[in-house]
Length: 462
Ligand code: URP
Ligand code: ZN
Ligand code: ZN
Image 1 (cartoon, rainbow, N blue to C red):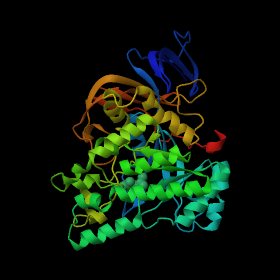
Image 2: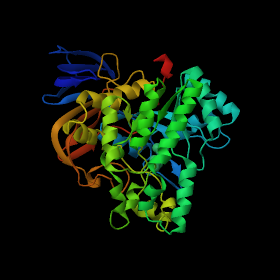
Image 3: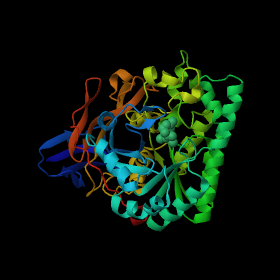
Image 4: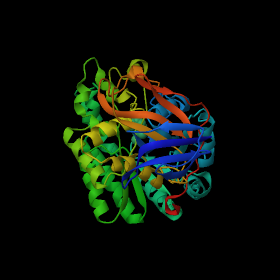
């Protein structure tokens, strides 16, 4: 199968050029002006951007959590992803008690078979027995999973000693530890204070997890990096105070990377006051913050202190899941929200159109740096030799976000009613069309099960 993308604007991290792109057998073979190639499919890209497919490094598909499961599985979640211009995702594989890393990976592969786009796994270390920590070497070198998530909160949090051992081991083998950074004891204390005052509505979820809880945990994790000489990646960074700690540590030469999410760049804590118990839609951890944090995170993206975007796509239905146990107590509302289908259009609208980041930076944080940090050697750029994971993007098309027009398997979107500027026109996964604009919304035209498990390479080897 061959495809010729004609007359588009190819965007990389360093610039943009008018060019044609020729792909064959799933790989980009040539880029140049007026390419003289015959192809089975020709796509007119005049007036459109040719972008590398978005890589979402933070999803929770079919994940058991807080007494229920996140609603999108690998089929519905990857259909939604494709329609949003995401052509590869890295999902969290939560290790179960007693499992080895190898067993956790095999189990997760068993539920990922219907994926429509390529996928990989981060191992979430939840039972850090010595033999599991020792398996880091094989995970980095043989299993293709060189990133390891740890939580500093929740029941399955790890202690600082485990963090140190993991940092030491990943340093040896080119792995990367990802940290959900919130101080457990601050939150526990706040929960007790709020419970005594009978403050249990969704709004108090945010009160219970103040910025300082994230700031302290980020600072502590950065000290572990300093001590071990290793590196970390902070997931879903939400507050300006935590960002300041990252900046300070980076200025001192520590290898700390940060990811933020569209929700922390576009929504603020006033959402918790939405009528009709609507605040529950935004119960996620960390919580939404004040508008000042939003502008600081944009600044961090511009300056290079925030390196990637991830969605933290973890959808629970507003009716039937958010209210299953949590109607009377915010602590029992499943934490998480959907976002995989809307990330690219939101970042273009709120970032590029509003002049907060350049188009080149959008490509960097949504694809190129993500591929580099997570060892996706064949992905992340429109360049010869890379997979033909391509989004032809119409920067002018207007679209009003509405759950009715999205594909994610959940009953709401946090961005309902927001008009965006710029949407995908067509999306290709390894040279095969998987989604296209049809009338007034995206349509999925790919195939369940075509997505492949991608073996990643260690950071140091890339
Ligand atoms: O609220 C969230 N973020 N839910 C998903 C699990 C996590 O902490 O990333
Ligand atoms: Zn988390
Ligand atoms: Zn998450």
